[in-house]
Length: 330
Length: 211
Figure 1 (cartoon, rainbow over the protein chains, first blue to last red):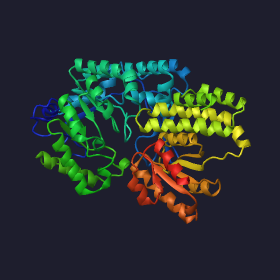
Figure 2: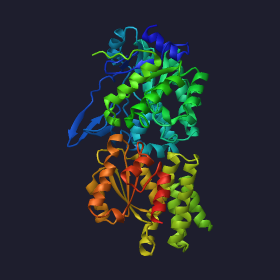
Figure 3: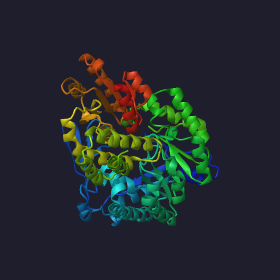
């Protein structure tokens, strides 16, 4: 089986010979990731003292610490006031040039699985457009405005889905962060009210193209996992699998023929630097989700205080359990 | 509960900030004591909001609008409180530690503490140890509350505690910590007085430390 076939066998629960593996730094990588670019937009970035400021395609202004995490915080949202919603200029993903780099990467993807990074999703974008704590209050206070904003955001993602399909993607990768360490940021009722129908519609479009839906979400999302599966999620990308009862999660994924794409837990396990703990978790991950699993590393090791050596322990332990030689290309 | 106090209580539970402001005005106009308005209606309502959050019935949006309603009511009540003998429960200097710009967790905790009648000194984000120390030394904070969202920045919490010790202030202040990567074990390791997993539990913790 080639790399793409191994990924598909895991996604389709077809007794793959090993889990999918997506590791950087020259290690085994079964997936070719590619991203779209908005038409007619160039990011502006500048540094003032210890802070770096940058805009995004929606018109938000961000700030991050120069020597800190890659991801910053909203400094100035694009919709500081609801009166600005009518003037919101969404990014343009209608032009085929938006997929130039994606098509080039996919054309040279060889036998790897082609995954189109869509860059966020509805909740992820919406919460930044208003700044997070204001948006959370909006969810409770301004449903009409929130729905309008969500529809604008969804329109952009619909454009991206078309482009990804036309570029030859096998799947799309979306990013939402709906959970805290203990549960959801908003209620399941609110999820159903604002998001479920929209997700179902868009995921249906993805499936109509023969593509799969890979969904990232940080934190603990258990309360809506069944509904997300109903809406059409094919793969959950959870960086903190230890927040879940992993056996229950594996069982529901098996029931819905879905898969997990995960590193060794990036909060409770990897940052400990405890080799025995990291290796034990790696083994548990491979054993528990056998047959419907893709293992990965976390891309921002510095941001989570993890040494490359600890990350390599996780990789080697996963490979050993999967019966694969942990190769690295220099 | 008095009918006017009940209106304030219900308004906060429902997150109706305009109604709460109006009801507080009406209650004061009817001669109700500011202390009763604060404690029997407003603080009691926020305690119920905290319970609903911990029980999984309220989530961040509901907690936020209730806190906002509380803040509106406090805005009307504050001049009356200043004239009376009613003092805040304690003064809390709160901030996200040096190198960390993430503030939503810190902001939620600040709102819930204010809802429980604590006075808040919000130091913002990327807060140096010196600033925390100054909040205790010069502004009389009894509690230092620190937040961190990154594993790489939570280590700065220890530096703040050490700075408080060096300044001879450690015994005068309680230190509480929280944030996504922070754990109870980490809190104990660095010598904090407590750890809270969420904004509601931060209030319970703060109350227990000043009781």
